[in-house]
Length: 82
Image 1 (cartoon, one colour):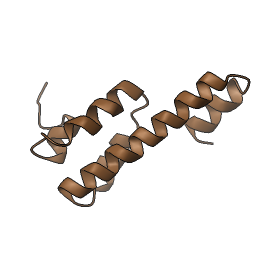
Image 2 (cartoon, rainbow, N blue to C red; image 1 turned 90 degrees about the vertical axis):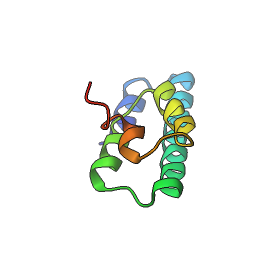
Image 3 (cartoon, rainbow, N blue to C red; image 1 turned 180 degrees about the vertical axis):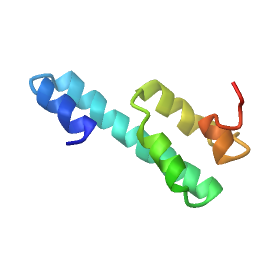
Image 4 (cartoon, rainbow, N blue to C red; image 1 turned 45 degrees about the vertical axis):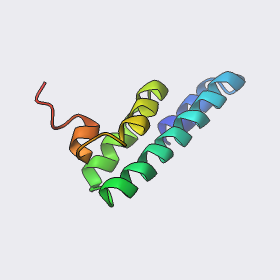
């Protein structure tokens, strides 16, 4: 069972939660599509890292940052040694 399924089952009466989860998945898909268009197909590790991000605000920031990132590693923060 995915994290999305688990969250829905945990609180299936919450329309707000469901809406937020759908927005999160849509934003993740948009970020992935933009990154693929700019940097080419994602390596498995990069796809897994993006899939592990559950915060809508962070995914939204990633989608916006695609236009200025120098590389996929830069976009996902792996180029930064911090």
